[in-house]
Length: 207
Image (cartoon, rainbow, N blue to C red; front, top):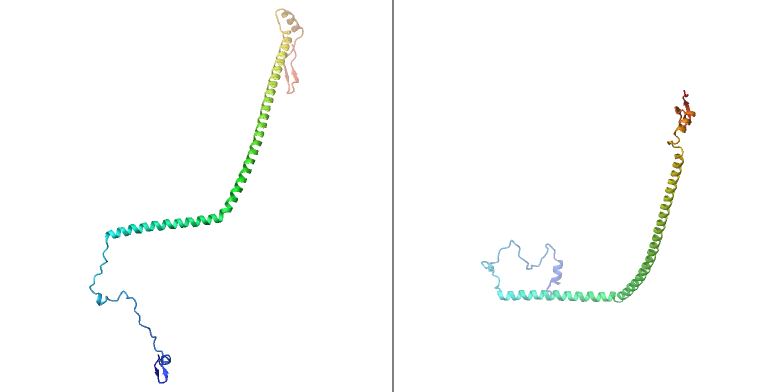
């Protein structure tokens, strides 16, 4: 209920009144650091409530057990959520992936077997060619040695024939007088000079 003053209500009077200052409602707040201690609390010593040691040990054990249980439950719930999420996302995909991997493995094994067989055939062919090449080189070396031996024998035969021909011109006790007479009848002058081509360019006259 508003009081009527001179035909106007109390609320209207307040609204029409000049605003000289801001009206702040007084409320109870916190004390500042500089406020003194209340008179009713002067000389009072604040003592914490007593604690039972046995009760504190029991509370600590129970709190530790509580933390362990809650941690185990959180891990269990997390693992279950992740497992369900993984099964939902990769259930059918995992089966399809496993089937594809099995088919790919079979295909790779078949290709590997074919490649091994091809390499084995190539290796056998290469070994056969190497054996044939070694045998051919061995035969060629034997033929070459035989030819060299024949050439050596022929060379020695030619040397023997040449030596036999030269033996005919050797001076022996039987033809010594005859060779002396031939040398006197046909004197030879070995005092001569030759050029680079081997031609005689200068020769002395026999006396």
